[in-house]
Amino acid sequence: MTKQDNRIRRHRRVRAKVIGTEQRPRLSVYKSNTRLIAQLIDDAKGVTLAAISSDDAKGKTPKERAEAAAGTLASLAGKKGIKAVVFDRGGFQYQGTIKAFADAARTAGLQF
Picture 1 (tube, rainbow, N blue to C red):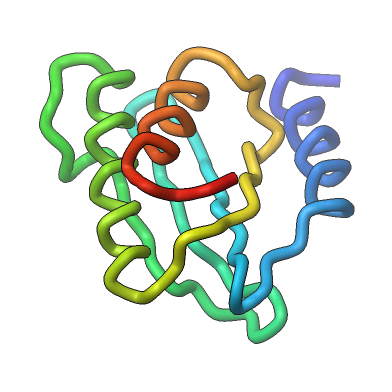
Picture 2: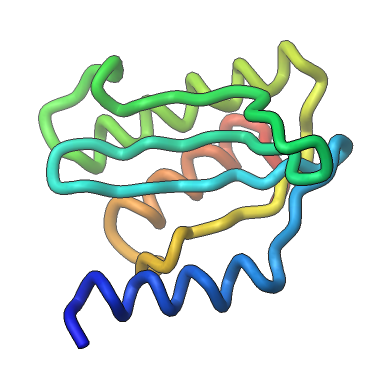
């Protein structure tokens, strides 16, 4: 099994347990080599409520860009009245850029 296959298997396990609702949407995170993409998703309706990419964020390192993107996503969520979310790490390990994004989102006001 390749590294990508293992990540997909982990993601399937996470998605079997994590479900977003209108009151508490799923905060889905995808990390590539160059950027981090995050979405707030209502799984009941199948609708993306807000999305952000770290391409638009300022910062020198991927970690700094992820932290800036988390602040932007939290402000978008606040405008839509979303305070609590369910975190979906997308099969990625909870360390480095993913952890920095989650911590920055928590400090910006999202609860999970």
